[in-house]
Structure formats: structure tokens, C-alpha cells
Length: 314
Image (cartoon, rainbow, N blue to C red; front, side, top):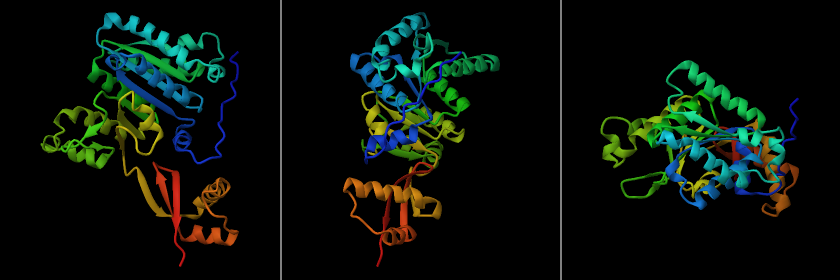
């Protein structure tokens, strides 16, 4: 009989940028995809292991898909992933999440690049993913016979079929840069559609990125909330800070500002109370707070994650 696991729920009492994003990811599933060439150095495994461990203790499910072009080496690569990542992920704080016997070893699974070539094969793959996650919130797959492009396509199909919250594509070039060489930290689906029109990507100096734009737009239109493109070294900064390190893709504007509604008021009051306890906001009486609420505007990250408020009373 499966042993119930008590979920780890970190206390949220301080204004912490990383915790803000962890709140968004709690109870959700993130999928990371990368070619094996991105895992060459010990620091690469450390970056992946640190982010994975942090998400797991946040009650977030993590899928990691690694493409291996040479199918004959896929079993070897899978053993290497297990050997390198296990000490970084399976620590005291994550041990209760893998209480079932064999759950740690079962998290590492061989995959075939042709898994989506037939409906029955796709169903078997996706069912295997969920069966693995029932035993512990981690799935690591080595995709035999998948080059860099195949890995992205494979991961996108998994992300779309399972409707994961976020797809993270690990990219050696660290996101999208404009013609002037400056990093583009955010692109929405409308911009992607424009770039995919004839000649637009070429005019912007982004012709080589067209395949990425196509799969990202497919993912967004199919229900994946957001897609990130970044390096392994920059992954933590991309996921846990507003500044980021690569490029974030979403269906619409990432941050929207609009007048607060009555359904926002309780959350805003909690935010103000925390700010007052932390000494970041000056103490205000209840009627002053009420005035702020009815005259205030909120900045929302993503679909419903309140980031901050502003109000001006004259």
C-alpha cells in the first residue's frame, strides 16, 4: 500500500523574490529539455540538480528530458544522469518525497525518439510518465536517437499532451538576442506570430531561431502557460528572478497593470500587512488601507499572481 507523503510547505512570511516565483510553481509541473551536449561539466549537473531539488521541496513536479543523438549510448548516458544527479537531488529534505521502495531508481527512464510516431506508443510513454510521478515527483528521461532539434520537438509534444505549467528549453546561446546583440528577455505569442511571417525573422537577424519560434508558439497555443529559453548556468536566475537570464515566452503580456477589484482586496491586505511587519511599508489604519484598495492598481505576473500594488490619494 502506498505510503502517504506529507507535502513540504515552506513558510511565506518575508518578501523574497525567489519565493514569489516558487509560489507560482507550487503544485504544478515544470518540464526541462536539453541535448546531452549541455551536460559536459560538473557545474552543469550542479546547476540542474540545485534547481530540481529546490522545486521538489516546493511541492513542484519536475520532468527532465535529455536528448542523446547516438542511440547506442543512451543507456550509458542514463546511468551517468542517475550517478551525477542522485547525490544532488536525493538529500535529507527530499527523502520523504520518495518514500516508496525503488522510487529513486524508477525516476530514471529510457525513452525512444520515435515514441510519438504512433498513438499507442505516445499513450504508453505519457502513461509511464504519470506512473513514475505517482511514486515520486521526478521523472528523468534519456531520449535515444534524439539530436538537439528532435529533443525540442519531443519535449514540446510531451508538454502539450500533459499540459505542463512551464516548458524550459536549455539553450547554449542563452535565449534570443536582437539584431543589436541585446538580450530579448520577453516575447509574447503575438510577436512570435509576426516573426514567423515570411521574411520577418530574417529581417530581424533571427532566421536561425525560426524552428524555436515555431515549437514555442505551438506550445503556447496548446495550453502551456509559458516557455523559457536559457542556459543551464542561468536557469536559476531565469526561473527565480524578474530580471531573468534568457528569454521568457508567454501567450500575452507577462505583467499587466489594472485597477484592483473586490476579489483582490483580501490578498492585497495580506500583502500590505506583510510589508508593515517587515518594516517596508508604513503602518496604516484600516480606513486608510480601504482607501488604498478602492483607489489602487495591481501588477499581476502571469495569469493571476499579484506582484505589487500602487495607489495615489489626493
